[in-house]
Length: 187
Image (cartoon, rainbow, N blue to C red; front, top):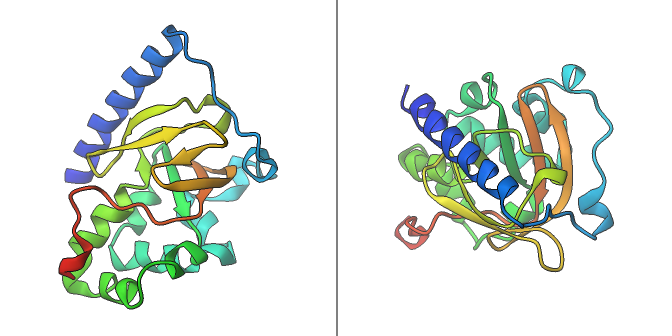
């Protein structure tokens, strides 16, 4: 129930930001990187949910394991719509040694949930609709999108976009995002 309430608040905030962006002089951002501007070839109806699409891609096995450990499978398989900035296996491997194992422990599920929901926006935002600026996440804080020299989400580069699912879209990123109030050194 708490996740639905957070999602509803985040969706309202995204809608407000989107309307504000549309009425301002900001231009729509697109990436000049070939990988970031190539949409996936799939139909939303055939793709399955965000969890199904991620589970069917060998580059997201660590993400899927983390979603399962955090108990977020049902949430991310829900109606949505969601935009997920999905870190690849390589992004998780770049974390400090042993950190992922610690995050996957049951006693750290709250921290893992905060990190994973920080990668989720409670609306479907295709690459052509991305604008620079702060974006509220399902976790409750904002991530920052920049568009100078390619699209970045906080410190992560967007490497592929518009991987459609029946309940939203996935944009692939090359780093794991961590909310500012999460102190990983305490794990």
